[in-house]
Length: 284
View 1 (cartoon, rainbow, N blue to C red):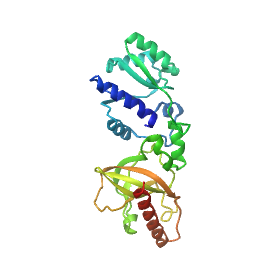
View 2: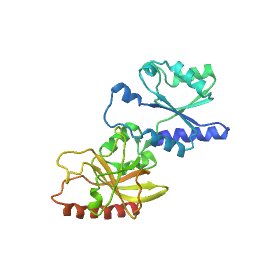
View 3: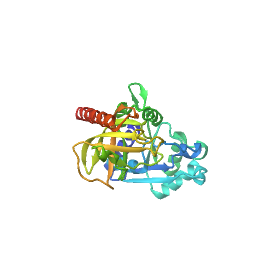
View 4: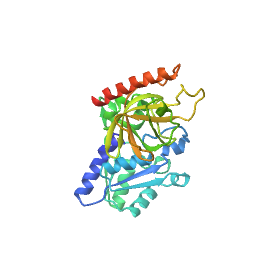
């Protein structure tokens, strides 16, 4: 959902609503790249829940998600368009400049235009979007996230890179240290920034607060890696948010996750991280 996608969607919504029609987005799950390349490592920049939330915020009226499986992968470009047209008759379709669809990627702008002449719809193609002469693409954003360069992503996304998830019970370590944290659930294929401490913002029931956030395995307490956790210490907050769904935005990486010699050394560093988080988020 980078600014290229958003540009298409803004035009879709504006045109549809101007003509009293519905703005409909078509997507696939799993991502065709995940299906064909059999990717089983974290890959998705937005989960389905995150994607639906963002689309709703952009004014989209309906989202159709096609299950991408072996049978669907064999569908021709025309059979896909015919099926879609029967589900939601449309008069205009919006695509990106490099969009391909159908068996063997036979569908492209030219093929879609031919089908438009047959079925009676027009095709609008979004040209590539650049930022500072750099092409905006999901693969480029994925590289930035994997490298922990979260502070560079806002211009590409028109928002901070984020994680939406439910607050679940952790092991209570933060509370023992005097800094109780919210343990945020995430999907296994969600691409997280690298292990480390981040200055972040957290949205809870419409409110936003600074949050010093740890991603990792907490090596000070565990010699062997436990499951990776995302834990946020929410500044100026004391309410119970267990089971609430929150959105965490990663603004800046403060440091790597390291093992401290004892609890006191960790506590002292955590206080520095909290102070740094407040300063960064207050001036962001």
